[in-house]
Image (cartoon, helix red, strand yellow):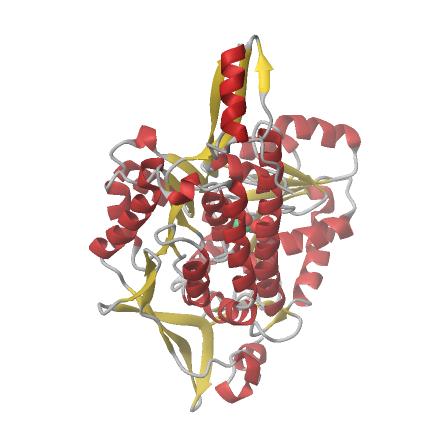
Length: 539
Ligand code: G3H
């Protein structure tokens, strides 16, 4: 392990040419009202999780800097969005759906041109490996395509009139107003765009603040935003949340709050809004998804899924399996197989072929994980894999902890990193109680082959979490499936279809089914005197 850690971080010359960052990126631009403005105030240093060897020493890579906007500047971005929405009278919220789709398609075309630049920064800024960084970019593009198709579908269904109890009506979805979109550092592109794009395409105007890490990777897209949307429709700000986002929420001018982060931060921000009843929220929050391994089980599959579930992107996924309950009858075999598979995961730098374990972007994260491990070992657990819990700089080699008990912090806290707690159990009721009493309710995984047990557990857990995965790890995808959570884990449901609904409200134009009204409606449609009342069919 020592050799591995000694050789983990590279010297600059050892980095393949195409993935080297030639010079620090000093970003001063932000996007307000269709203009890239230059910020002359203070900047935040952007550091990389990748440390670099230099003269026999190792130091954290500095990638550049990003603007630390003040509250006043953030509010100017909000005002641009408010003006573009213009109380619902703006060009964007009134534009025909087909035209809004055309703008989003323009953006998608320009975004695709930035794939290499964004992928490179994903690796450098958050340490995501090349394959997953490319996947994040491509999945985001696919999500945009799927969103366009889902909206076309929705619009086609709304292009007809309905007749109920003598009332003729046309129901369409209309935008809500100004949306504030904030994403998480683990999916700084994908998760942010799964709210940003639906918000825009439904006719809302947006203020977007990138995640705390994964900031510079939005820079290559600023021109694409500027050139694809009318002024004020999308505004991009940077800076500390305390300074910027608090001011936006306190202004009362945000109508929709799309946020992925901790429930505490979400609650604090929501409380700042002076008219909370007028704030719609779409929140993706904390989770502590359990994996439950039953005594009758295909152990190889359970180990395979639990390993990727717990450790892909070093466990930094909201959907990661964050605690494993394994029946006593199979726990020895489970741990043995798990360790062997874990030992085969390759540590390294994000661009190295086949790398699975990479450095962590959050400052202080390695210390926090060390504390969790120290707490667990002081209370009777052991790190049972070779080298588990060893660290160097920002890198933490995964620790497989066993046996974990309720007295330990890692039993309760969301580690969001490469620590895998395994709890042995004999009585299934203790596991059921864990789920029932948990503050979280995103997903869980059941590993087993006995239909009677699985069937009854599905019924018990269906009212506890948003998704029950059978013999599979927890995950968000496919993106057309609902993604949500109960308790502290989420507010609202996202999926390609659901997101369009989250960022809009059904609005009905209704009239008595009488000759004069029929003529009136027919004339409006024939003369194209309304963009809402129309039977246009989008192909
Ligand atoms: O961090 C939470 C993400 O939504 C997880 O998505 O399950 O596709 O990795 P994923």
